[in-house]
Length: 171
Image (tube, rainbow, N blue to C red; front, side):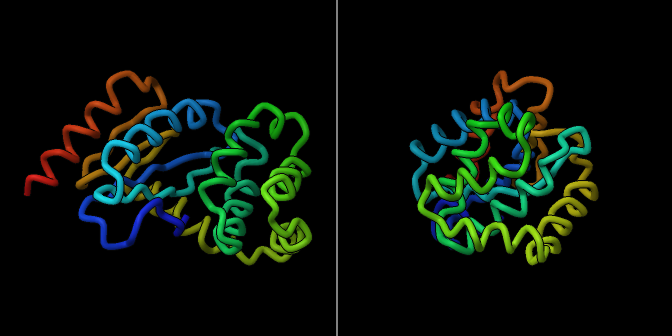
């Protein structure tokens, strides 16, 4: 997702590879929020899409997130959608439009974007890059070329990321 949390000139970039139907990614939001709060504009958190085959609606959710970026609310949309992963799994794509409406986004345009596939290339490119760097599960983080896998456990990831950010900021 091209909608990062800070200005594009941030000195440290953290790529967060998420599946937007993944309950572990919802849990990981606490770490992402804490890191953004700690580092502010010194850390650029970039969401990257890695929809897992086991999550039937994750690919459409990634496309919807890209439409939210187009409409100026990428991260708010991602956070609201991740809070409803179980509902997305049960009810499917109508949830994507409901979240858009709740955030004041143009739900008709969301529906059109999902039908016409205007964000397919972005999602496909992220997924291909993720496979190339051996992302196998979500959440996965990449910072300074180091891949940190959070799919098995979030334990200690925030601290490892913070240590890397601190080291990079010191130069």
